[in-house]
Figure 1 (cartoon, rainbow, N blue to C red):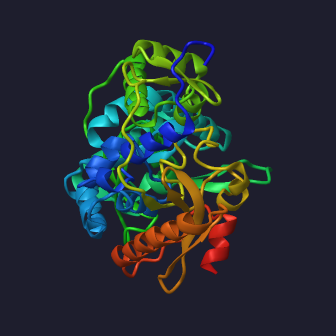
Figure 2: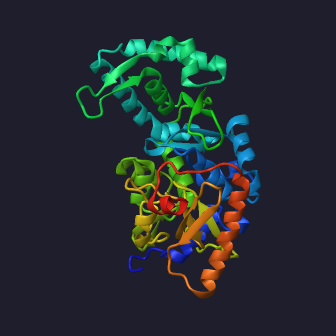
Figure 3: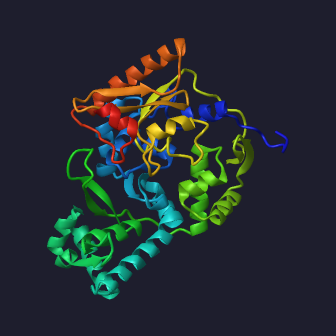
Length: 396
C-alpha cells in the first residue's frame, strides 16, 4: 500500500476470525467462560442467542445447556447485564467493572433522569420517593437472592404504582414503576438478570443484586475494553469501534491512543490492531463450517461487513432494524442462513453461488453442524426475537 502501512486483506481477516472467534475446529473452546472471554461479550437480548453462540464454539456442544447454566446461575462466572449501545449482553464477571465504567455510567445517568422527568410529567411521586422505593427494593432483593418484579412488589408494594407515559401521544400507555426502575437499576449496574422463569429459551427473568465490583476510571475502562475487543476483532476501523461501543468518536480515539494501537491498511481504509499484532497469522488447519444464531457476536462484530458478508445477501439475512438472523458460515464468510422448524429439524439454504467440490464440502460440513445442533437443543424450539426474511421462509 502506498501509505507504508501493513496491508491486511480479506483472506487474512477471515483466518483471524476462524481462530479468534473459536469457530474453526481446533480453536473451539472447552467451557462457556472461554467463549465469553474470547469474544468479550455475547448478545443477550434474545436469551437463546447466548446458548446457541456458545454451542457453536464448544468442542463438546452436547454440554452447552448444562455448562452455560452452571456458568451463569451457579458459579456466576458469567453475568447478563446492560452494556454497549444500551443493549443486554452476557459478560465474564471479571469484566463487569470495565463495562460499567466504560459504557454504563453515561447511559445510566440519562435513564434515571428520563424516568424522573416522565414520572413528574405524569404527576407521579418525585425523585426522593423513587430513591426510597429503590432502597427498599434492593434490600428485599438481597434478602431473597433472586426474585421477579412481582415477587419484589410483595415486599415493596409501591413498585406496583403506575403512571401515564406519553399522554395524548400515539404511544400513550401506563408504565409500572417496577418495570422502569429495575431497568434503570440494571443500567446502573446495581442489579442483573438471574435465572429465567422457564427453559433456556425463556425471555422472562428473575433479578439479582449485581456482583460487587470496583469503581474504575472511565478513560482507563474504555482503554481496557478497546484492548480486549481489538484482541479478538482486530483489525477494525475507527467506525467499527464507534458503532460497537456506542461511544463518541473522541472517546474511541482516546482509547486507541491509550493502548498504543497500531495502524494497518484495510480495503475500507485505515484499521487498527493491538501493538505487535500486525504480522501474518496462522489460519485454521482445516476447513470449517458453523451455524451461528441471530445476533451472534461474530456476525454483529463490525459495522463494515463486506469482507465476510456479501451485500447481496443482506436483504435475506437482516431485519429492517439491522439485526442479523441465523447464518451459515464457511471458512470465515457467510454463505447462507438457517432456521429451526416446529418439529425440531434444522434447515438451511446456501445463498452464495457455490459449485462442484466446494459446494459438496460445504453441504457435508453444514449437515454435521445441523445434526449436532438438533441433538443438543433437544426438545427446545428456537424462534429468533428479531425475525428475518429467510428465517421466516425456512421455518414455515
